[in-house]
Length: 495
Image 1: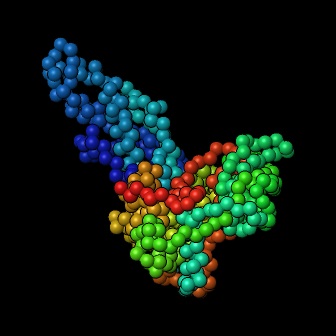
Image 2 (image 1 turned 45 degrees about the vertical axis):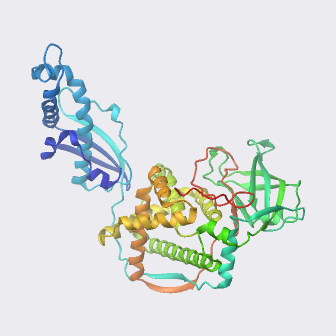
Image 3 (image 1 turned 90 degrees about the vertical axis):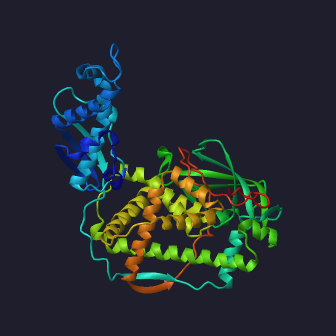
């Protein structure tokens, strides 16, 4: 539940009770800059008022044996239905109380209140007291953000850059043909991956097909010289290497330890680009010609440049405003927010035109440093949100449509399906934050002083596997699959 949710709570059962404010005794403790422990006491007269309103409303429909519906004496109705009505108004009182506390004390909530509704009982006499925890945006003085000196990546995309990016895009649709030649970079190999520690297996071997690139990343570690180790090998050979698991590995017992990972090469394939005919061009995006496809590739590169400019500016803004961003962020908060930050980053990368292989590599990098990256993202968000409030920046429906269309263009799904997936995951607020923060960055850039630096296209050096090689629980991330392992991708259903 966000700050807006608390402000806009609508309790239909107690229209009359909302005509006057509740008499509340509120005690707020601040364990950290981002945590609030709130104790609320509701006066007995407000409890009685809610009970009275609820019984008044039900008198005309109360069904008491021995009386016609709606004709039983009020005292009898109150005796018979007291528990049912008490349970009903308890929820209303709690919601109304929390909404009033938020309004009176200006709590900028960033999560739902942590409250055990089942443990709260409406007392037969005296006031009602309940407690809840809330994660909030920290309070701070907003530093001067105008006139910042910021490095800005710049680039001109010519035929060579478009050719390189086009080849990476076509890799999602090309054919992989069997090869008996020694492995070289760019080949696709199917490997059986098994991990061990001190000679003891860490689990069943897993089969994956990967592109041979300089490094190979897992969710919990990276083989930095993967390409060098594999190059020159052939099908049937085994390669064993050491992998240092990150401190935030899913298997907490192995966090930070070095394990052995074996790659048994089961299959080797070379990659052949698809034929650029009209059927293929129509399949991948209803392009009329190769020129139209190249224009789309150039637009994708421009969006990647825009993303890099936004990210570089965002990082520098945070660094330059560190005096306002040194709050303690509780580990529990970072753990809860890390999943949402990962989902949000994936959405942002997709709308910015990054290939899925790069997105998976980014996702693994974030997982390997989840607490640090989440802390940085939250600090950035708090500062940018404050600027947004100061300048009255918000998202409009057309903004959501544009973001969803860009994501759909990258994943190959219909905008309607993408929106449904985002809503199902509860990520519309993350999409809103993404839109607002981008607008705020634009405002900062309008006031900034720039130093242009060369833009370096990301990706291409790391192959990513969606696997925690050290074991442990693994959450899911949304993965868009463009092509099958063999041949061209089947047409998608865009209904």
